Each structure stands twice: as C-alpha cells, then as structure tokens.
Length: 245
Image (cartoon, helix red, strand yellow):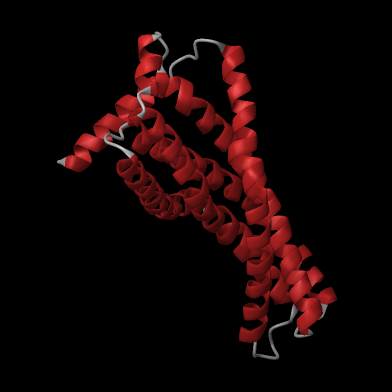
C-alpha cells in the first residue's frame, strides 16, 4: 500500500511541477544556473571515469579475442558498441544519480525542514514548480551532452590502452571504430539518457520535497533518492532497450 501511496503522491507532485511557471524569465535564469550546478560541475568525474572504463573495455575485448579467425579490428568495433549502447548512457547515469540525485534531495529536503518551502507557499509561489521544474529541464538537456563527452573520452581511453599495452595496434582499433557504424545507436543512447535524467531529478525532488524531521531525515532522503533512482534506471534501461532496439 505504501508503494501505491507514494506513486500517487509522486504523480500529484508532478502535476504541480509541470504547471506553467509564474515568471518565464525567472524560470530560464534558474535553468541556466542548473546547467552549471547539475551538468558542468559533473563533467570532470564523467571524463575521468569514461577514459579508464574505455581503456578497460578495450583491453578485455582484446584479451578475449583468442581466435585467429576474428580480426583485431573487432576490438575497436566492440568497444564502440559497448560504450555507446550501454556504458555511457546507463553507467554514467548511475554515477550522476549518486552525485546529482543526492544533491537535489538534500537541497530540497533542507529547504523543507527549515520551513523555506512553507515560506514560498505563504508568498503564493508554487514551490514544486519553482524548485524542481528548472532542475528537470536542465538535466534533460545537459545530461545527453555529458553522455556525448563520455562516449568520446571512453573511445579515446580505448585508443590509449592500445598504444600503451601493444595488444592491438592503434590502426586496427581506429578501423574498428569506423566500421559498421549505425547513427541510430547514438540516437538510442541520447533517448535513454534523457529518460534517465528525468528519473533522477523527479525522484530526487520527490524525496526531498516530502522530507520531514531534521538533518537525519535529510540524509535518509538523499540515500533513498540515490537508491530509488538507480533501481528505476536499471528497470527502464531494460524497457527502453526492448522498445528502441
């Protein structure tokens, strides 16, 4: 019953969140501010993780190709497909769920327990719309851009691994990257990322918005935001893969 109740409260909150903003200019200013907070500040960790994971994927692929009938160019091809189809959109979104989701939940939860949200309601402001909607729009726009960076740096990391390990020549790796490319795979990755961004921001905002108590409850809300967002990302990853592919 608690699941049904929480789902109902979530849907009611979303109705408030996606109502028309009171002031469009203020809304746009908040969205651009969230680009910095939710997106650009996450770029560093996205790049670092992508480079090293791309290198690991390339090395593991080369290690598992033990048949002379399989050309070494398949290392680049397999690395590219793994990165675009699964690693960058899904695994980086899970990382962002931990970094961004906990931040959103703790920020809104702190405003709730310190009665700042109540103050907004008294002033006639829709707090759900004012606090959560800019984060949702900013994340849905900026997260696919982060994923594009992730894909590029992951493939670069695979190229570096080929240079320093000497398992596969960089030339074979590059040929594999360029071969049999389907542009739809990029579209698929970006669609998944946008859906995951929506999940992260709305679930985290929901957890923070309904926080009650004090600092301990804010921490609990942040933890729940990360856990629930991660679970939903995994579930919707399966659903979207089945639908889109």
